[in-house]
Amino acid sequence: MSAGDAAFDAAFYDDLDGTLAELWAQLARGAADRRSGFHTVQVATAARDGGARVRTVVLRGVDRAGGTIRFHTDARSEKCADIVAEPRIEVCAYDGRAKIQVRLRGRATVEAGDAAASAWAATRPPSRVCYRTPFAPGSRLDSPGAADPGPGARDPVDAEAGRANFRAVLVRVESIDWLYLAARGHRRARFACDGRGWSGVWLAP
Ligand SMILES: Cc1cc2nc3c(=O)[nH]c(=O)nc-3n(C[C@H](O)[C@H](O)[C@H](O)COP(=O)(O)O)c2cc1C
Image 1 (tube, protein in one colour):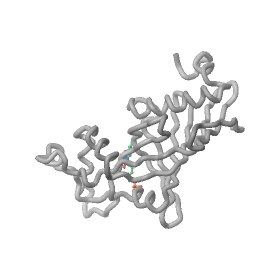
Image 2 (cartoon, protein in one colour):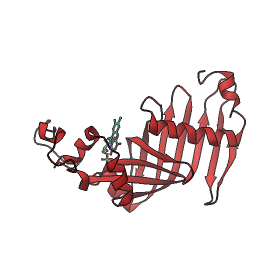
Image 3 (cartoon, protein in one colour):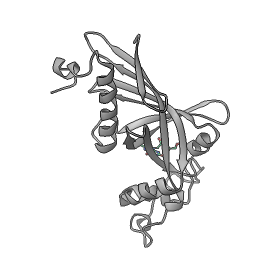
Image 4 (cartoon, protein in one colour):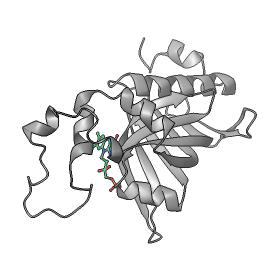
């Protein structure tokens, strides 16, 4: 069944609780399935110069019960410094097949301890390569390929190399803006978490 089918709509179309359940299920699929439209998300931060920054990251974990999502990054990246200075961030994703946009607002923390350790342990070897480079993300290079990983980086003597640069970013989601583009009428809803549970209202699309 495809996203455009009426029967697909029926489960959540005019149903706030159903929409909330669908939303978290779609996010969980995004973290688990690289073919999902929610596998990558855009993370917006307030930069320290007062401007905005946005970039793509891979959604790595979704915990509906805890109301959190997780992505991984390099401790030396600009986004880490942005988050430490201003933890309120927004995450946006659009699944073109499902015709669903989600925008998550929340507070992010850059985790170096237990949360990062378990995430690192679950990270496959190819994903570890980028954390081994001596070049911080965004640092200036003298030649375009200066930061290319050599053969040693892909097959390191020490499998833990790069661990010190690895961070898990946990986002405690506080509110969610959902937009579903449907031919028979778009549906938009906002959900907020008061610490005990979620409540939702419909919004004009
Ligand atoms: C498809 C895709 C997936 C990406 N995934 C990640 C990721 O999971 N973590 C990450 O730190 N950067 C990821 N990046 C790179 C970021 O978009 C960004 O260029 C980099 O992290 C530097 O961002 P910053 O300077 O704002 O910190 C990804 C880029 C693309 C295009």
